[in-house]
Each structure stands twice: as C-alpha cells, then as structure tokens.
Length: 502
Image (tube, rainbow, N blue to C red; front, side):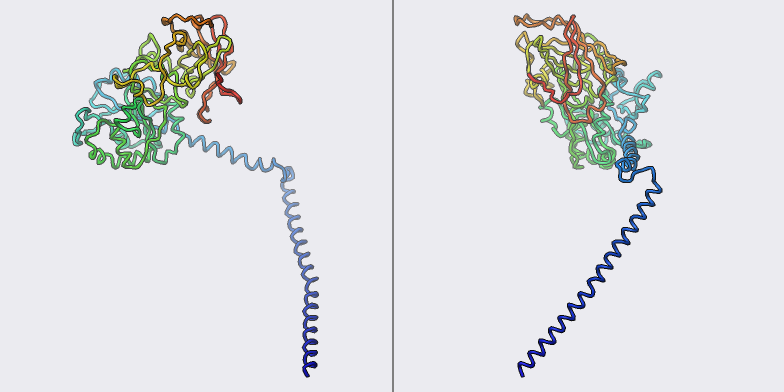
C-alpha cells in the first residue's frame, strides 16, 4: 500500500511541475511581445517629437553648443546688469561730520577738498553753535545743523569734554531727520578728515549693507589702543555703519550712553553701544586716524596693501608735500587721485641693477632711490619720520612694525616728490613726474652711481579701477631707462613669475 501511495504522489507532483513549466513557457513570449511594442511606441513618439522640433527650428542645431550659449547669454547679461545696479555708490552713503564752531573757518577747507556736490553727495555737518555762512559756499559744503541738547546726559570723565556725548549721537541724529531714501551706509568723520570717496565706495562694496556692519580701524598708537580699545573704530579716521545697524543703534543709544558716564570720548561710547548690540569692529586698514606728530612721509611711502580711504589730524602733522601749505599739498594729491584713485599711494619696489639702486614708488606721492640693495621686507616697513602721539614714548609704542631712519650715510634715500601728473591718451597710460627734493646729503664713499645726478623720475602706469577686485598684491615696477638726468619706470600688474628678488 505504501508503494502505491508513493507512486501516486509522484505522479501528482510531476504533473503539477509540468503544468507550471508549461504556463511559464506560455507567458514568456507574450512578455517579450509587450516589451517590444512598448519600446517601439516610445521610439516612435520621441522620433516624431524630434522631427517636429527640427522643423520648427530648422536653422539651429539642437545638439550644438551654440544653441545652449544663445539660450544662456541673455540671462548672463541680465545678471551682470543687475549686479551693476546693486553696487553701492556715493548716492547710497550719508555722511555725518563732527565739527566745532570755534575751528569751522579753518577746518571747512578740508571738507571742500573731498565733498562732491556735483555727484549729489548727501551729508550733514553737525556743529555745537551757529556759524557764519558765506553765500558762495552754499554748493561746496554739506548742510549745516546744530546738534541736539545733551545736558540731560551725565559726563564724569575729568580729562575729557562733554562734547563727546554730542558727537557720539551724530549717526542717530542724522537718521532721525528722515526723508533720505535708498540709504545703505552712514559714514562718520571729523571736520579735519579727508575722505578718498572712490576708495570708500570700493571698501563698502565688499560688504552686505543689509547686515550689521561697523567698519573702521584702530589707532597707529599702541598706547591709545590699550587705553581705549583695539576693537574701537576711531572717528577721526572715519567709520561706516550699515543702515540696519544704524536703526538698531538709534533705538537704544540714548539709554546706552547713560550707562557709560565715565568714558572719555565719542568713539568709546559708540563702541560700548556696539558691544551691547554684539557687533564687532570690522577692520579696514585704509581708514587712518594718524595719531602721530611730525612728518607722515614714512607712513605714506609704505602704505599697507589696501585702498587709501582717509587722512586725519592734518592740522597736527606737517604738510605731506614740502614748501606748500597743508591745503595746497592735498590739492596736489587730488590730481593723481582723479587719474587712478585705486592706486593712490600704493607702493611698488624694484631694482636698477645697472646702478645698484633700490627704488620704491609710492604712486602719486613720491619715489625713493636707495644706494645698494635692500630687501622688500625692509622697504615695505614705514621709516620713522614721525613721532609717537605720546611724546615720551619711543618706537615700541606703535601698533605696527617700523624701521629706523638709515644710519649709514650712503643709504639715506633720495626723495622725489610728485610735481605733475597727466593722462597720455595715445597710450592710455598715466604719466606722473617726480622732482628731486634737494636736501643736504651726507658724504658717501661708496663707489656706486650717485642718485643725486637724477633730476626727475617719470612713472608710466595704466589706470586699474579693478585693482581691488583681485586678491591683494603690490604692483610691480620695472626700470625702463636711466639716462640724461631722468629715470623712467613702468608700474603695473605683476606678470606671472614676477618677483621682487634681491
């Protein structure tokens, strides 16, 4: 019985397996037929669509790069146009200038040097008392206003003056006037601050004006920065506050000022309020407080690699060019500034191998010729032609590296100051000429060519308004010729492989 049962089960299993195998074999051809039909239909639809597209665009190859370029090009132009329109300009800046009636008749001449009413600049000079206004000056100066009463604010610093409270509120008072559309930045300065406005715009374009920004620089005096703060912008050198930050400051500043009656000046009060808002100082080294005395030559001839934005304390230091007044000296500086503001006072270093000279060009300001070969590391440091703000302090009181005036009589530089500047239209180059400043030179026993025989230096340079759109780097200079009492130099963007090699 068991044998019969096993055989019957085997018959049933075999028959079921044959049925399953037969069924799978029957479905496989059908599946292949449907797959072929689906692929054929898809190919047919795609081909018809392709032929239709080719018919409608018979002059354009849809697979060519040209087709995609033509589709993308208008978008790129539109984006570039929008970017240009979004750039910050002078029309987006409002200046707040701190002034006193006592010094106004003298200090207003500094403002006239940089104020550009023809460009519809906006700003207000805030005074402590009314001043006489000449009719012929209406268009050459900003609007004049008297600061609000600050007698309700306590001032307890014995060494300072309560006017610091008035000055610290200038940005807030300017904002409260209202009626100033499309403002992106408020820029603060003193009546003896001279702004290089083109470079100021270049700096502000680096930052998003919709965010909180407090932009400026610290003092040249290490002791000043220790006494006040390295995180404080000095108002004489100027600082910029973005519009949203100015609005936030205006809402809280009066209460903030009341919490700091013991502070000395306006700048530290401003920085205290910025600290409460949690906004740090964004440093830009082109804002110059110039807390020094004496001759600025060493600082200007070795300017840091950044745009020159401002000059301050011009009544304290000597005129930047010899044998002229301070105003006349600054008027001379305006000539190269109009030709190539981005490159103003930017240093280039090169060597005259024939004469064994080291040459430093501070474009638009001065040229120095040194006997012998000095390294760029040494020349890029300011020479100590100036004195510390604290007259009893020595050179370690500066907040940057300096080098002593050359002790070796043979290495005393021969200085050539800017005398003329113009644009050479046929070559699209600027030509700046520098005349030797005749000063007593110590006797030198070196048997090398004497720079005293050079009467003038001619420097050729193409304007470069996009200099600061690239990464920071000194321009390179090359000696073209040194004949007939003149030295001809070319300054420009460094080429690949250019090195200021000693």
